[in-house]
Length: 309
Image 1 (spheres, rainbow, N blue to C red):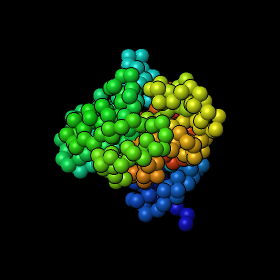
Image 2 (image 1 turned 180 degrees about the vertical axis):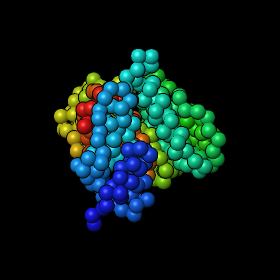
Image 3 (image 1 turned 120 degrees about the horizontal axis):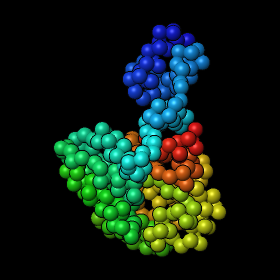
Image 4 (image 1 turned 60 degrees about the vertical axis):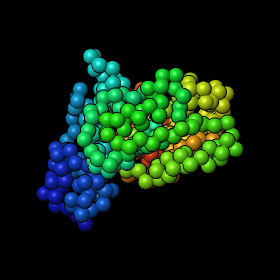
C-alpha cells in the first residue's frame, strides 16, 4: 500500500526528530518494522529526508541511525573520542545511561564480564526499584583484576539496583564435559541457570577470538594454542564465552560445550540484549554478532561503527 507524502513526513519526523525506534513507529502506525525501514528509505529517495554528515555529534548520530537500519537494532549509540576522557569510560557512561532508562520494578537482568561492563556498572547511579534481580550469566572468570569479573560486576550492579543477587559460583570454562555435568548437578548452580531462562535484559561484552585479544586466554582458561585452534576453525568472536563464526552462528566446537553459563538459545530469547564494545580490533567480532542478531542494542565507538557501515 502506497503511503501519502504526509504519512512519509510524519514517519520521518518520528524517527529523525523525535528519536523513536523503528519498532515504536511500527506500533504507532500499525505496520511492520521492515515496512518502516522501507518507508524511511523512500523518504531519502524522494528528498523528504536529507542526511548531511559533518564532524562531531552529527557524524556519530548518523552512524547510529545507519547501524539501526542496517542491522535492525532497536538502538545504537556511537561514541566519539574526547580529549578529556577515555573512550572506554565514555562508552561505559552511555551504556550506564541506557541501562538506567530500561530499569523498572521487578526487572530481572543478567550480566557477563569485562572492562566495558565494569565501566557501565561503575558509572551507574543508585536507583530505587523493587523486586528486581541481577543474575550472573556465566561462571566466574577469575580475572586478574576481580573488578572485571562477572561475580563482582553482578554484586555491584545488584547493590546499585537494590536488587537480589544470584552469582554462579563456578568457572566459566571447565576442562571437560564430566566436570561440567558434575557442577550442573549442584543445586545452587542449577537454580541460577534456571533464572537465566526468564530474564528481561542482558548486559554483555563482545570479545575477539584472536589469541592475543581473547579474554579467555588472558584469564588462563584457554591456552594460546587452543584459542588458535578455534580461530582456525572459523571463530571470530565470543559472547558469554560462546565462540561464533563470521555469520554469527555459535560453533559446534568442544570448547563451546565446556562453557558453564546461560544457554545461548536462552540468551537470544531475552527481550533486551545490550552489547558494548570498544576498539577497532573488535570490529569483525561485532559485525558477526550483529549478523547473527545477537543484540537488540549496541553501544560502541566511532571506529567500529564506521567499519560496520
